[in-house]
Length: 141
View (tube, rainbow, N blue to C red):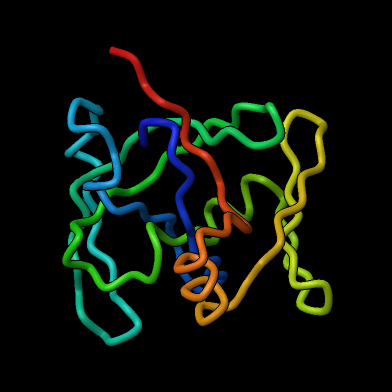
């Protein structure tokens, strides 16, 4: 889906749905436009998604299926998307502020990702460091 590149997601437990910027995906990826939704941003702007896409996340050798809402690149998101409450609930995720980690479960496996602040993310991106990323596998069609 993302040509096997790692994507950065913000974790937002106040966001109802999980979003990913559509331009980060392969041009041939099929999505469901009838699943469009209107959401209100933190700035109180209403945006409409393109629709949803069913794909998977590769983490620790495990494929995790999930349905994301696609947004345009004009939507002001830090990183490549937002992991919202739908993702956090479906994977029984826990955020530990003390350890700065996100722990989630799929297929009986427990996975932990280090969380970093946005300034740290920007600094590490400039240095080429890959911390706290989720991987979307390359897609063949």
